[in-house]
Length: 148
Image (cartoon, rainbow, N blue to C red):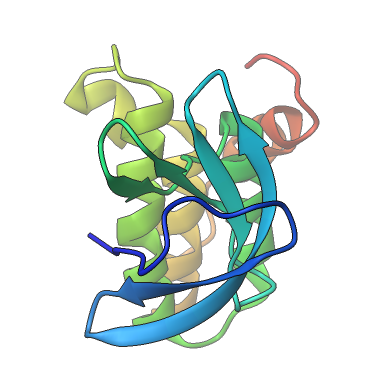
């Protein structure tokens, strides 16, 4: 888990955090959160979500994306061409899907439209036939915030 050298910052302060792989990163404090008892920072990677530092746990927490965020990511990945990169991102997406649907069983996660969209992209890059048109419609509805 990342750690910080300074744990009582003010909004706008810069803090150093230790990321996995022993890499230090300087980040800016976005806001203090009195309810959750911690603070949010902007990561040095602009594409990364904000990080939350919990005083109670003395640890950083990465917020899990929403189901809508995961559906949008599944649609975005359809333009990718690096199979290896997609597989690594798919692993993270499945972990996040499980967090977004904590009561879902393995079969439900395996057959979820978001899962199928990722697998469809992998199958497409591997040259397998395109047979998942219904998946697109389901993922597009989820990305729009509609139920499936």
